[in-house]
Length: 244
Image 1 (cartoon, rainbow, N blue to C red):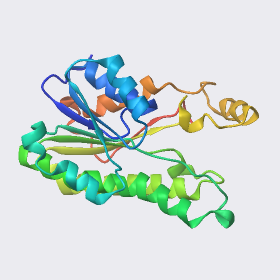
Image 2: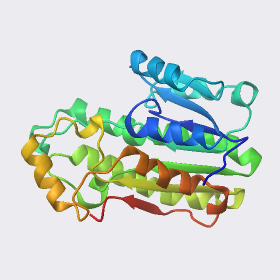
Image 3: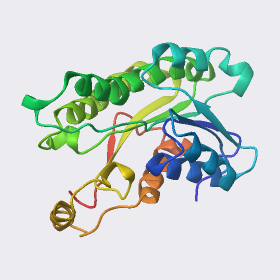
């Protein structure tokens, strides 16, 4: 269905959960994939061993660390060639009601979820502008639209991501670069694995299709926006929520 042969994609948080599904889908479609991760060497190496081949590369750094991101992009063209696709998928949750929220939890969620997108986009668009082509997809959340109890930090970071994307798409449109968001709802990943069973039942009841989504269904939406044919879609948010 998709053909990304000859293209290079950079997927942050690309070795686990939704990120892994996106990396795998891009690889199956013929792309070279650079999947980043920050700390779980075991999961990253298991991913590499399972996938194999020479079109998957792993890069270990924290997207919230501006200096680390700058170092990764230093001499990017010489090391990796062109950059066609950036998927900003890295993200964390540290939930708490606002009155009890630790300031470190506020800062860390904003630093990774939103600051990481700024860091990656800042350097990625420079590579893409030279080629006058690029696809950027930022993974946001319905939390940024609706707000959920106990997620002020997470919701703020995801809403900010949409706003950043809307602004950035206008800055780079003339260079053939599109910037969009994909907003997954309840997806069966580690991110929601800690939800109590009674809450899972309640949430599923509230989803019109009566189930949680699969990472592969999010990956399909991402690849749709990364296609060359999606050249007139920019500044959009594609919801993968089962009808929420």
